Length: 137
Length: 137
Length: 137
Length: 137
Image (cartoon, rainbow over all chains, first blue to last red; front, side, top):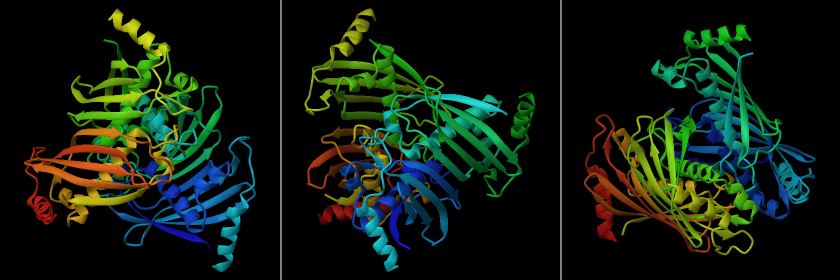
């Protein structure tokens, strides 16, 4: 499977008064994971936008396994579960510095034409790099 | 079913460059819904914490149905799906000012003893008010 | 002086692991204050944007006087210090539920034409309502 | 002067609907700058906390010079203006990928004993590393 890996240092801004990362802030971690995953395979989300495509999230399922603490260096591992038509499912696994799986999520996004606001197929530029890499692995 | 309703005005801080509420910011809306729901039924989350109980989120499932825009006055409707043992499932439906359902989520929390970090049963003070109100409705 | 007052309930999302509101989250409170201040005087920031005007912040000076805690109901008091040409200075005082001043800030914004990205004079629709109210007070 | 430099990639989560970084999100950038600055000189903010010291912000002055856009790789340069008694002033300059200064801020923090909530002198462990490095430069 095609995977991307990105390290992130937890900031004070990410925590809440329970002394752990606020449950709403993980979505940003998945965003970072997706973006860096795509960049690694030769494209940027910004380029997609410049092509007139935006990718709104349509669903998200999260499992909070272990709390993540301030100043931890977490590892965000991202993979594409599938890209079918106008829809892409990204999977994120987050590991703490001890290598323990602390959080796991599926985020489904759609490809939308910015002007018409209609669903469009995933751009070939994106599926091609992912397909090529999928075969390689 | 016991329901709580709370209105929230979308701020610039909630939006992203796609011109809609950032998908990670809905978690805050569910938090507001849960907190105001509990308050309405005679308790505060702060009181739970003062009793030595914290409620970390263990899972969250979200459906993003329609984008929410800047300055919209949304309505957050919250209900308790179930409280069983050490676990509570809250359901949130978010409506825009046209009354359309724009977002829907289930958030599961556990009851944890702050000191021992162990699971504890939902405090009677909380289940009682919810039970009483469930019968009333 | 023209003043607006708006109450805000501090959320878990606003706090950090020091158990207080994260210092970066006050900017959102000033935004809420400004927005509701303008709304109270008959205009919305959204209307300004629909007129093709955006108001980027050019400077901000903040004094953190007392920490603000989770679930506190704070009061955000906003006034316009001055509107001169293309520039408006808003002042915000935040009070806790005991009526103590806990935070104080000056935020300076400019009026920019969205298309040309050039400075423009504050729209009359805005200065008029503020002037009228200034005389009344 | 002792300086720390840290690169940060702007995320969707950082932007607002004006298509630029939300003015409230820069505080997080200064936090990142301070934390990495201290780490570079041999200490972590977490160690300070473990020593029983917290550092609440008492004032912040920000100049927003140029907007920062999505996906820009900004450079956060941090220096200590002075540490006197219980007070430290950090200065942050943020540069975009063209090397232009886009944002500039002074953030003043105090050293507080976590238990007594009283001001304490900056711990020697911190001032020493900064002093040594100041002489070196």
